[in-house]
Amino acid sequence: MVEEVLVMRIVSVTTGRADVGHLEPVWREITARWRKGLELTILNVGSHQLPAEWEGFSFFKLPRWWMSDHQGRDSSESIAQNMAAVVSNAASVYTLVAPDVILVFGDRYEALAVVSAALPFGIPIAHIGGGDETTGSYDNQIRHAITKMAHLHFVPHEEAQKRVLAMGEQGWRVHLTGLPSLDGIRQWLEDGDNGPEPERGEELVVIFHSPTLELETAEQQAREVGKALAQIGRPIKGFIPGCDVLHEKVRRAVVDQCIGALESEWLDQEQPSDFYRTLSEAACLVGNSSAGIMEACSFGLPVVNIGSRQEGRVRPENVVDVVGNRKAFVKAIKYALRPEFRTFCQGLVNPYGDGHAAERIVEALAALPAKDLLLKKEWPR
Image (tube, rainbow, N blue to C red):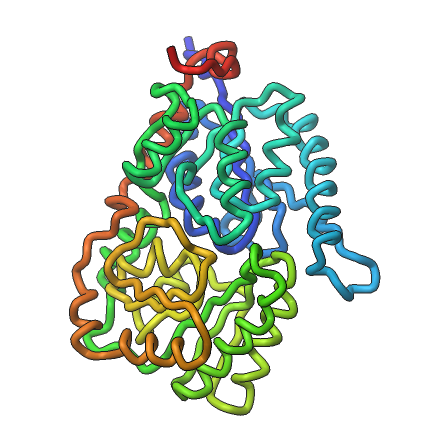
């Protein structure tokens, strides 16, 4: 007699290129346990392409709403209308798939829309990355809103755990796991063909997103970043900013200062393994990306973090924070490129985990309590 295995249907949501590195190790861990009753469906609500091996998986890609004239697609109105479209389309997927749990990462507005759509269906939400802090962007409110709507929390460090508990979440719901992106980095570094180069290259990795709480000065900040990069004069591998308010104008303001002034390459995305090689070979990461705070430390990579977008996050010691103008940015980049600072960055402990988060997350998902208990959230007594 064959023992019947109860299936848990997990819908994992990816909202953009930045969260694939966090989610892919969890996807691998789930699929490795499929015989134990875990079934994965990937819901892509971003414009990015997943690695080829996942495109053929149980997979839905939601259409994105953009203004028909293609002008102003980075406006506040356009972003809000895209959120509404995600809510509507996610509801259709939930009706079709009937998931037992939705797994979502981070703080993107698309993630908030996906989670909001799940509430009327009574679907439990498992959230990775709650309790972090970025007071310089509206992502902060989104992340905390998702935390209060979620039923299970996988947090990156002890400070985040304290914050989630302080928000009134019951202790049994909160799991200190670390970030799963470090799992992928650990595995990549353990591959005999990979690892940081003995001598790093001259290239600067540049990722500058829209400072969403400083929209009046966003273009000017971006222009000053571009001028600083042009003055430094090193080759650049740049990544186009994520789809936030004014992202098109911010992108243009940086790129216009660099094109023709120095050797530069601008990409929309790289697959996680390619991005890890980029970080392992670069001289420095410049911008305001979470990758500089969370992942760069694992490669011993100096980081110049510009402006307020990442304010409040726990920082490893490879991060140099700077605000101001071109002159201040140039000074900070030159400091980060000093041989003694680059040597100091080697071997630092990454505060965002030990590279074994995915297994902790999937163990918790496989041992979910009864749905009635999970959905009924109470203030701790």
